[in-house]
Image (spheres, helix red, strand yellow):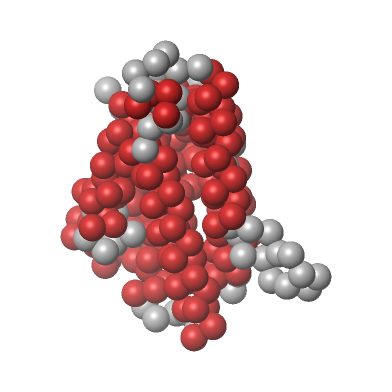
Length: 214
Protein backbone atom coordinates (compact mmCIF):
# COMPACT_ATOMS: atom_id res chain seq x y z
CA UNK A 1 0.00 0.00 0.00
CA UNK A 2 1.42 3.40 -1.04
CA UNK A 3 2.40 5.78 1.76
CA UNK A 4 2.14 8.88 -0.47
CA UNK A 5 -1.08 10.63 -1.52
CA UNK A 6 -0.91 13.95 -3.34
CA UNK A 7 -4.43 14.84 -2.20
CA UNK A 8 -3.55 14.21 1.45
CA UNK A 9 -0.48 16.46 1.15
CA UNK A 10 -2.53 19.17 -0.57
CA UNK A 11 -5.05 19.01 2.22
CA UNK A 12 -2.37 19.28 4.93
CA UNK A 13 -0.75 22.30 3.25
CA UNK A 14 -4.04 24.09 2.84
CA UNK A 15 -4.94 23.53 6.47
CA UNK A 16 -1.80 25.42 7.42
CA UNK A 17 -2.36 28.18 4.88
CA UNK A 18 -6.09 28.62 4.97
CA UNK A 19 -6.87 27.40 8.47
CA UNK A 20 -10.67 27.41 8.80
CA UNK A 21 -11.12 27.84 5.06
CA UNK A 22 -9.58 24.43 4.37
CA UNK A 23 -11.93 21.70 3.17
CA UNK A 24 -12.04 18.76 0.78
CA UNK A 25 -13.54 20.97 -1.89
CA UNK A 26 -10.69 23.46 -1.48
CA UNK A 27 -8.14 20.64 -1.80
CA UNK A 28 -9.84 19.49 -4.99
CA UNK A 29 -9.60 23.06 -6.30
CA UNK A 30 -5.79 22.85 -6.38
CA UNK A 31 -5.19 19.13 -6.97
CA UNK A 32 -8.00 17.52 -8.98
CA UNK A 33 -8.37 13.81 -9.70
CA UNK A 34 -6.38 13.87 -12.95
CA UNK A 35 -3.53 15.96 -11.52
CA UNK A 36 -3.48 13.73 -8.47
CA UNK A 37 -3.06 10.66 -10.68
CA UNK A 38 -0.04 12.25 -12.39
CA UNK A 39 1.54 13.22 -9.07
CA UNK A 40 0.98 9.78 -7.59
CA UNK A 41 2.56 8.10 -10.63
CA UNK A 42 5.52 10.49 -10.45
CA UNK A 43 5.92 9.47 -6.82
CA UNK A 44 6.05 5.79 -7.79
CA UNK A 45 8.62 6.52 -10.50
CA UNK A 46 10.72 8.58 -8.08
CA UNK A 47 10.53 5.90 -5.40
CA UNK A 48 11.65 3.16 -7.78
CA UNK A 49 14.35 5.33 -9.38
CA UNK A 50 15.91 6.55 -6.13
CA UNK A 51 15.25 3.37 -4.17
CA UNK A 52 14.36 5.68 -1.31
CA UNK A 53 10.72 6.02 -0.32
CA UNK A 54 11.44 8.89 2.08
CA UNK A 55 13.27 10.94 -0.56
CA UNK A 56 10.53 10.29 -3.14
CA UNK A 57 7.91 11.37 -0.62
CA UNK A 58 9.85 14.56 0.16
CA UNK A 59 10.22 15.43 -3.56
CA UNK A 60 6.51 15.08 -4.22
CA UNK A 61 5.54 16.79 -0.98
CA UNK A 62 7.73 19.74 -1.97
CA UNK A 63 6.05 19.83 -5.40
CA UNK A 64 2.53 19.77 -3.96
CA UNK A 65 3.35 22.35 -1.28
CA UNK A 66 4.67 24.83 -3.85
CA UNK A 67 1.74 24.22 -6.23
CA UNK A 68 -0.86 24.73 -3.50
CA UNK A 69 0.81 27.87 -2.14
CA UNK A 70 1.00 29.42 -5.60
CA UNK A 71 -2.64 28.49 -6.16
CA UNK A 72 -3.64 30.20 -2.93
CA UNK A 73 -1.66 33.34 -3.82
CA UNK A 74 -3.27 33.45 -7.27
CA UNK A 75 -6.82 32.97 -6.02
CA UNK A 76 -6.35 35.72 -3.45
CA UNK A 77 -5.00 38.14 -6.10
CA UNK A 78 -1.60 38.51 -4.47
CA UNK A 79 0.37 38.70 -7.72
CA UNK A 80 1.19 42.00 -9.42
CA UNK A 81 0.64 42.60 -13.14
CA UNK A 82 4.31 41.83 -13.84
CA UNK A 83 4.13 38.64 -11.79
CA UNK A 84 0.99 37.56 -13.64
CA UNK A 85 2.90 37.93 -16.90
CA UNK A 86 5.59 35.66 -15.47
CA UNK A 87 2.89 33.18 -14.48
CA UNK A 88 1.45 33.20 -18.00
CA UNK A 89 4.90 32.63 -19.51
CA UNK A 90 5.51 29.76 -17.11
CA UNK A 91 2.15 28.23 -18.03
CA UNK A 92 3.00 28.40 -21.76
CA UNK A 93 6.36 26.72 -21.24
CA UNK A 94 4.80 24.07 -19.03
CA UNK A 95 2.23 23.39 -21.76
CA UNK A 96 4.92 23.08 -24.44
CA UNK A 97 6.97 20.84 -22.17
CA UNK A 98 3.99 18.58 -21.54
CA UNK A 99 3.19 18.36 -25.26
CA UNK A 100 6.81 17.44 -26.00
CA UNK A 101 6.83 14.75 -23.33
CA UNK A 102 3.54 13.30 -24.63
CA UNK A 103 4.64 13.35 -28.27
CA UNK A 104 7.85 11.49 -27.47
CA UNK A 105 5.83 8.85 -25.67
CA UNK A 106 3.35 8.48 -28.53
CA UNK A 107 5.85 8.60 -31.43
CA UNK A 108 7.98 5.47 -31.31
CA UNK A 109 11.50 5.27 -32.77
CA UNK A 110 11.71 3.85 -36.31
CA UNK A 111 13.24 0.61 -35.05
CA UNK A 112 10.08 -0.09 -33.00
CA UNK A 113 7.72 0.81 -35.84
CA UNK A 114 9.56 -1.71 -38.03
CA UNK A 115 9.23 -4.35 -35.29
CA UNK A 116 12.98 -4.77 -34.93
CA UNK A 117 14.60 -5.27 -31.51
CA UNK A 118 15.29 -1.89 -29.91
CA UNK A 119 19.01 -1.13 -29.91
CA UNK A 120 20.08 0.59 -26.69
CA UNK A 121 21.91 3.19 -28.78
CA UNK A 122 18.67 4.03 -30.62
CA UNK A 123 16.90 4.53 -27.30
CA UNK A 124 19.72 6.77 -26.04
CA UNK A 125 19.49 8.92 -29.18
CA UNK A 126 15.69 9.09 -28.76
CA UNK A 127 16.01 10.34 -25.17
CA UNK A 128 18.78 12.79 -26.13
CA UNK A 129 16.43 14.25 -28.76
CA UNK A 130 13.79 14.69 -26.04
CA UNK A 131 16.32 16.36 -23.74
CA UNK A 132 17.50 18.63 -26.55
CA UNK A 133 13.95 19.66 -27.40
CA UNK A 134 13.23 20.43 -23.76
CA UNK A 135 16.46 22.47 -23.66
CA UNK A 136 15.16 24.43 -26.67
CA UNK A 137 11.86 25.05 -24.90
CA UNK A 138 13.63 26.20 -21.73
CA UNK A 139 16.83 27.80 -23.09
CA UNK A 140 19.49 29.63 -21.15
CA UNK A 141 19.84 33.38 -21.84
CA UNK A 142 21.91 34.00 -24.96
CA UNK A 143 22.44 37.72 -24.47
CA UNK A 144 24.49 39.24 -21.69
CA UNK A 145 22.15 40.71 -19.13
CA UNK A 146 19.08 39.03 -20.67
CA UNK A 147 16.71 37.48 -18.14
CA UNK A 148 16.82 33.71 -17.88
CA UNK A 149 13.78 31.98 -19.31
CA UNK A 150 14.22 28.64 -17.63
CA UNK A 151 10.97 27.38 -16.12
CA UNK A 152 12.74 27.11 -12.77
CA UNK A 153 13.85 30.74 -12.92
CA UNK A 154 10.40 31.95 -13.98
CA UNK A 155 8.88 30.17 -11.01
CA UNK A 156 11.49 31.51 -8.59
CA UNK A 157 10.89 35.06 -9.84
CA UNK A 158 7.14 34.61 -9.53
CA UNK A 159 7.31 33.64 -5.86
CA UNK A 160 10.32 35.75 -4.91
CA UNK A 161 8.35 38.31 -2.88
CA UNK A 162 5.78 35.89 -1.54
CA UNK A 163 7.44 32.66 -0.38
CA UNK A 164 10.34 31.98 1.96
CA UNK A 165 13.84 30.76 1.01
CA UNK A 166 12.68 27.36 2.28
CA UNK A 167 10.06 27.28 -0.46
CA UNK A 168 12.67 28.38 -3.01
CA UNK A 169 14.72 25.39 -1.89
CA UNK A 170 11.72 23.13 -2.47
CA UNK A 171 11.43 24.42 -6.05
CA UNK A 172 15.10 23.70 -6.69
CA UNK A 173 14.76 20.25 -5.10
CA UNK A 174 11.91 19.31 -7.45
CA UNK A 175 13.54 20.70 -10.61
CA UNK A 176 16.90 19.08 -9.83
CA UNK A 177 15.22 15.70 -9.51
CA UNK A 178 13.03 15.78 -12.61
CA UNK A 179 15.73 17.31 -14.85
CA UNK A 180 17.96 14.26 -14.23
CA UNK A 181 18.73 12.88 -17.72
CA UNK A 182 19.29 9.39 -16.36
CA UNK A 183 15.80 9.47 -14.90
CA UNK A 184 14.45 10.55 -18.32
CA UNK A 185 16.38 7.76 -19.99
CA UNK A 186 14.88 5.12 -17.73
CA UNK A 187 11.40 6.66 -17.84
CA UNK A 188 11.28 6.56 -21.66
CA UNK A 189 12.88 3.14 -22.04
CA UNK A 190 10.12 1.03 -23.69
CA UNK A 191 11.59 -2.07 -22.08
CA UNK A 192 12.18 -0.40 -18.72
CA UNK A 193 10.27 -0.74 -15.44
CA UNK A 194 8.56 2.65 -15.77
CA UNK A 195 6.63 1.91 -18.99
CA UNK A 196 3.29 1.51 -17.22
CA UNK A 197 3.83 4.64 -15.11
CA UNK A 198 4.70 6.71 -18.20
CA UNK A 199 1.58 5.52 -20.00
CA UNK A 200 -0.64 6.63 -17.11
CA UNK A 201 1.20 9.97 -16.77
CA UNK A 202 0.89 10.80 -20.49
CA UNK A 203 -2.77 9.70 -20.64
CA UNK A 204 -3.58 11.96 -17.71
CA UNK A 205 -1.56 14.87 -19.15
CA UNK A 206 -3.42 14.47 -22.45
CA UNK A 207 -6.69 14.77 -20.55
CA UNK A 208 -5.55 17.97 -18.83
CA UNK A 209 -4.46 19.42 -22.19
CA UNK A 210 -7.82 18.57 -23.76
CA UNK A 211 -9.62 20.20 -20.83
CA UNK A 212 -7.46 23.32 -21.16
CA UNK A 213 -5.94 22.87 -17.70
CA UNK A 214 -2.36 22.33 -18.88
